[in-house]
Length: 251
Image (cartoon, rainbow, N blue to C red; front, top):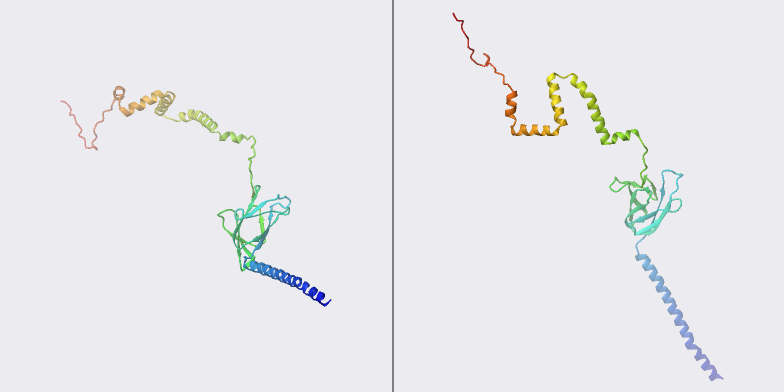
């Protein structure tokens, strides 16, 4: 009986040692996992949340769900029915916020997150690219500046639109000249009237006007005009230094 009891006692001992080692290994594995998570969390950079709200100038107007991006799509979110939005786990650095709206124009915001002050980001607003910058608080409050118009309203008929036509303006000018020319010619001298009539004849017949211009340039019509043109003899005067001839009386 003693011999059987001795083997029974020593037969359970290896199982007890194995279970103790298994528990120890599990405990060490759990501790290593916890230490690894702690070290990973301590080595990862801090993050912050960026939040704000979109508004319309008219409080009664409704705003559709709008897409908002950081850094040209590195982070993306959508607005809630009340216009609120939020970005989670944003790392430190300089980020550019854009509102991707097809109906309204919102400002562009540049956000700076510092590792020492992740809870208080610095925000700068640009109404449009290149506009003067101005600081704004966080959470952001962005109000639409304008609405996009993709279609132009058709204008109705207006009597003043007729005068925008160049042909109508030319017709009115020609009619006014025809009305005013006779009255202007009444106050002219006969010589001026003749010159005006000749000019009007030339304008009515362009070939005559061109031939007269060519003659004036080449001098071909000097002989023809010489017959009709009679030079006037001028006598030298005493003031000009000329000599006057005095005739004596005949006896």
